[in-house]
Image (cartoon, rainbow, N blue to C red; front, side, top):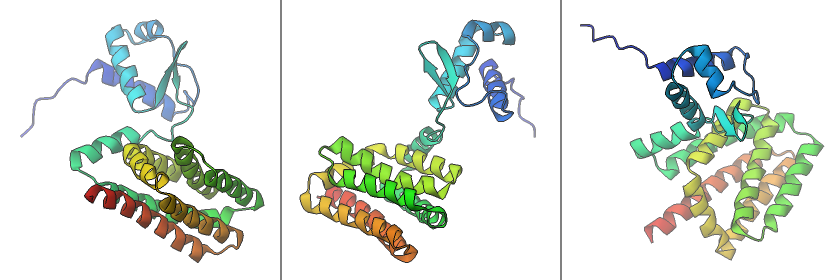
Amino acid sequence: MLSKVKTERVSEQVINQIKKQIESKELKKGNKLPSERAMVSQAEVSRISIREALSYLSAFGIIEKKSDGHYVADDLSNVFAEPFSLVMQLEDVTFREVTKLRMVLELYTLQLAFENMDESMVQTLKDVFEKFQNSSDLDEFIRLDREFHTCITKAANSKLVLILLNSLSDSIKTFNIISRQRIFNDPSARQELFDIHARILRAFETKDLAEAEAALREHFVYVIEVYERNNES
C-alpha cells in the first residue's frame, strides 16, 4: 500500500539547493551567501522559509552567521557534533561507549601519523606537551590536552578522521570537562595523565609504534576509570 505523498517543505527545498551548491563547489568554504532579500527574490519564496533553511544549516555547522551575513563555514570539523549529541541523548549512549570509539579512531590515526611523521611534527608535539605540563588553570589544561591529540590526528593527514574525532569530542564536551576537572583537581591523577602523555611523546621520538599504542589505550582506559569511579562515589 502506498501512503499519501507529501509535498516537500519550501525550506527543505532551499536547504537542498544550498547543499547541492556546496557539493558542486559552486559554494566553497568561507564563501558568503547572498543576502536574505536576494535569496527570497531568487527562489521566489517567503523570508520565513529562507530563515528556516539558514537556521537549519547553521545548527548543523554548515554555515555560520557573521555581522555582515551568512557564510559557508570555514571549519567543518564539528559538523557531526550536533547529530552525535542528539543520538547520544535519544539512545542513552554512555561516556564509556563514545570514549572507546574515540580510542579505536585514534589508534588508527596513530598508525598513519607514524607513517607521516617528521621532525617538525615531533617538535610540535613536544612543545604542546611542555605547555600542557605547565598548564595553570582548567581551561588551559583541557585545551592543551585536546591540542596534543589533535597534533597526532593532523599528522595522520585524514580529513574525515579529524572531522569524526572533533565531532565526537564536541558531542561529549560536558563529560570531558567533568572528567578532566576531576583529574586536574587531583595532583596524583594529573601526574598520571602527564606520565601517559610523556610515554606517547617518547614513543614518537623513538619511533616505537607498539609503545605509543599501549600508552594511548592506557590513556583512554584511565579517563573512563576516573569518570566512572567518581560517578559511583
